[in-house]
Length: 140
Length: 305
Image 1 (tube, rainbow over the protein chains, first blue to last red):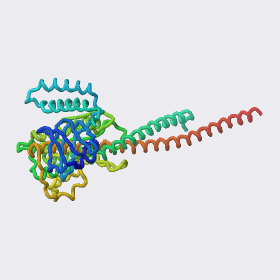
Image 2 (image 1 turned 30 degrees about the vertical axis):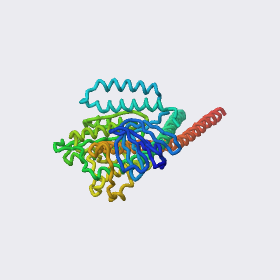
Image 3 (image 1 turned 120 degrees about the horizontal axis):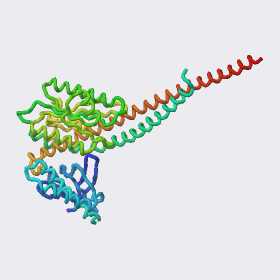
Image 4 (image 1 turned 45 degrees about the vertical axis):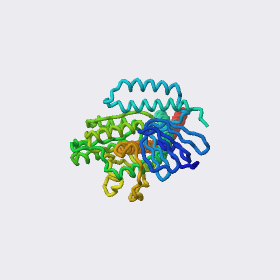
């Protein structure tokens, strides 16, 4: 089934991407999920991670999203991300340093610390950045 | 009549003032354009968010806080600017904030102020009103997502812990570059968007989307929700609140730049008027001096005869 569905990625600063996609995969609290055409109506939150959209011409687009919501309604997918960075804007070395820094903070916290959840998110975001930086030469 | 030299000095000072006000006007015109753009760009997000929130929250009684032991406190976020020279922008806003504060107190709630912007902080310090929280970023741009997120997080944290039982924001609504109006908007508790009859119910929806009204009766769509509705509602609520606060900040920023642009425009015009009337006076003074000198020469020649 080589259908497509319409896909929109919006952030508070504007519409980042809009168009048809063959498949979109993102990371929710229960793990990575993929959306294909004719997906059931669906809402989920997103955790920081890499969002991938495969376009009809076979090109895959990637963004690092820092959390938000994804909705599929009547075959239309809308991703509401708090922020979306394209891999081109990420420097691999800075990203690696950020992981180290975030990891250090995170591993010193106990589960009951109020800073636990934000630190965990920061770490996930930093890791997603590293992952995205490695994807930089846009795979075709 | 003032001496010729004094008038010349005043003219040159008016001219350099005019140069400054003209430059400031151009700067705020550029910033206004940018702020308006950001305002337009934020609309698709808040529209989509309002739609998702609608379909999710209408089926959920909104269950986040506050609790029976509420403290009868209200959090009031006041958004002013960091810089002055914006005409009546800050004083109108702060007057509205004071009025809102009195209103909330009249309703029997204690007000916890959250001052945003140097002018708000200074104002409350001067008038001796204790401020619970304050935030001065002093960046060229007021409306940053980080700021919106911090304010929303603070509201939500205090609200769900029961420290406050309502939260609202006073900001300046941007109508056009010439007209801005201070506005109070209660953001928490959120009324279910379907509850259109409630006085405040529409306020959040109105802030995030202007196109909601016709869809209120839409049949509820069955969604597969992950991880669970109960876990998703706080996420949606946080997003909703962040978008509403961000929207308020964007409006405030556009208003500030609009007010400054207008103020600097009239200052430039006033300086121009002043320069032309001083120039007239200067010409008259110069003419008088020439006449006086001529009289001296004629008088001297007469006396020699």
